[in-house]
Length: 425
Ligand code: ADP
Image (spheres, rainbow, N blue to C red):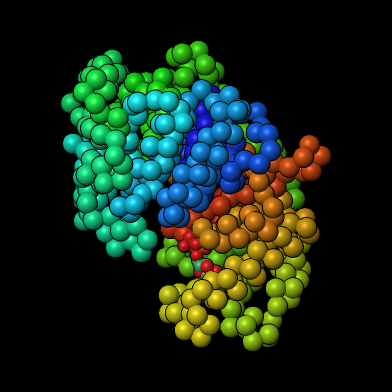
């Protein structure tokens, strides 16, 4: 094992894992702090849900994950956060960086959320989302982590007593040697966390080479693209062209959708327009006992013989609003998540082996119902959403899972995703 990644949320973990796979590292994602021994892989990504929990808890979980990754032999540790640096003045990015640095006994790391391919760039320590400063982007209104300052030095310095400094783009543009030298001089001047500028894929490659020997890298998923080539140059990694290969899996296919995003509404509509079979989950009918998860499961199962089926609660904002008004936001969400998770588990029991799930919370509920603990990361369906295979004991046959957070994917996402598994099977 070369790289151990600690990710502060579930879909972020999948995102960084798919970057590593793309660059030829065989990668396994573990859900939650690892409990048992870790599998064989070039990289292991531990998916925590620590972005907005209490800082002390986030630190503890991150240290537990670190201990497991070090015990498995990780040469380098990567703390992955969001490319919009989602955090509050209390953390959790700063406190987790401090704790990991202390545990790793290191006095220098970088912080770089840049992901130019997705429009996230850092210049003179300021984070841009597309053409706008972070503080002028939609992130300023985020319900949990509103980001009202684009100056990452200021944002991070508010979260850590360690000195935060700047690795400027003019140095990064000169290449890896200049960058490495600058990091050393920043360290000598007392900087402990260097916010790194990056405007392009080339900058990520430079940072990867310059930082491959640091015990700890902290970043969004972008920097992960630059590390595998650096490992290869050091002779640690032979990039595997088959890193994204998943076991061929036959069997029935289904889509379960609890996301109500604009993108998912369009995907559901497109599936139905294309003649795909579907079963609608009506939260009010469930609540009033006019239908039940068992009834809906039976309906979906009956339709499987003709081909893939879509089970969806996806609805327009107006309909969701009406349901939430009647049942309460929390209760409506839980009712739907539990129903979809029950149906997903039932479908798997009845032979579904290729399952697409739409919705971040919905994915969490389904993965929990299926008791999934590890995912092998496969090819990307769209940026940030790979196919994955569940890993059970030797004998159990794997299940292919695609977990899509709300706004990802074009209108044909469901069909495109399933088509990829047919080609592989
Ligand atoms: P996204 O990734 O798009 O945010 P999530 O699955 O995270 O999707 O969140 C969607 C939430 O909306 C879930 O809690 C889900 O149970 C709930 N939900 C889905 N359909 C409905 C509906 N028709 N009415 C009310 N709530 C719904």
